[in-house]
Image 1 (cartoon, helix red, strand yellow):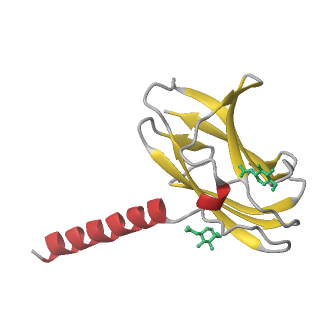
Image 2: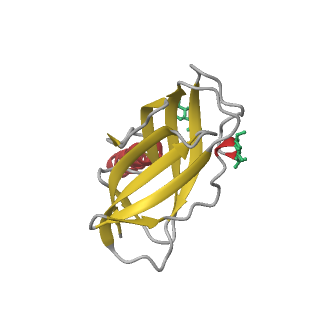
Length: 154
Ligand SMILES: *[C@@H]1O[C@H](CO)[C@@H](O)[C@H](O)[C@H]1NC(C)=O
Ligand SMILES: *[C@@H]1O[C@H](CO)[C@@H](O)[C@H](O)[C@H]1NC(C)=O
């Protein structure tokens, strides 16, 4: 009796730990690809327990980019590409307007923002490894940020 109750409570602890790991937002390693008028501090992809992130078809992932702007900007627009064998392919995101993605516009110089968006992985994408490149432009088409991360679609 005692042993069965202790094993079920350790199973509960294990379950909690596992859920905790999945829910915990881990910063991902990124490469800066030319952020000209801003500085990327942290990129989070949730969930992504192992890197490179394995993204499952039919699922949607949360992206949280902490960045600081060097400029004032009335508006901001995002553009996402997949890079496959050196070729950039547009990756549609549901909301390209950065002002509707956790950022209060206008963007102020010297302020730090959390850019929040979703990365939906369509069912029809093939299984493959690729690089995701995420750009955010200011109102003069300069890059507030550009970062890229390797991912794997599974
Ligand atoms: C986004 O990331 C920053 C830095 O890690 C964190 O402080 C903030 O709470 C996150 N926001 C959301 C909505 O997850
Ligand atoms: C952003 O602001 C610039 C400068 O005011 C303007 O030319 C441009 O049309 C705006 N873009 C969007 C998507 O609102």
